[in-house]
Image 1: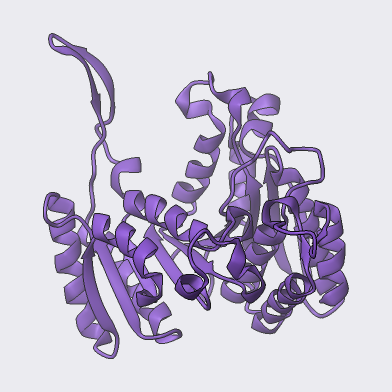
Image 2 (image 1 turned 45 degrees about the vertical axis):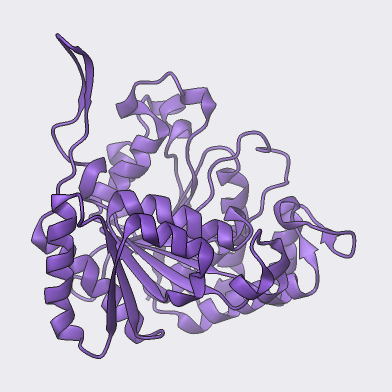
Length: 360
């Protein structure tokens, strides 16, 4: 049965890296993937054409696809656009409307890139962390929110809200993942100063009773940030809320040396054997190098690999893609963001795509 993939390149370098991922899809179709794909607009590119960062038409296509591959959205070009029309609103809309509550962001240090990290080799060598971020609740979606005038001056309001079921379902994702890894979950919140943190800790502990084979550790978010830099190998799976997940996953990403290397998956609940999934690189749209064939496509290609594993049930093809990336890096090929010395071979975005495809 053929799979349907919706590709939303977005803005800036998103277009270039998505093109390389499409080439990988075409290569994998020769090896049994059996997937069709369709491209459409999201983010600033959609706003420029349609006046909206996410149209109803694209949203319907996303709902009717087996998976969505996204490049990147945003850029200074749209800084003065009202918040509801900005490129990022298109991404938030996809997450919300597809009910993508679980964001999976691995922080994996490739052997060939240990020296690219700003931390000592012994601290990051063989590092493999999975951060599970709750994606549809919390302060990014809570109401009321806004800026208003008061007798004492302007007042800004953001509301952090979590329901018990939202915490339970993200905890179950984390515990399930830990069973396939090293059997440890670190739950991160601020129970010392936030009521949502108190509830978060309570519900995660309750959910843990169904996963007694997994070690559970509770940690405050500020301590977790410190420990990620001090001793990141103590972590296996980190589960946390929307805000802290945003911050901690970027922190963990830089342990690896480059945001351009890291993929992510945003997953919904499984229903009738299927679930919505949005797969995208962690990096942004990098408008300063857009159109120059300098971008690193590896994070997008690895996001496609996560799609193969989590949504399209093609783990063997996922392994092929990851092995090809490992080979290219071990052979010394680098895009500009991970190029560190003259012993390496500096290549363009499209050339990196060529090399990976040759080794799949």
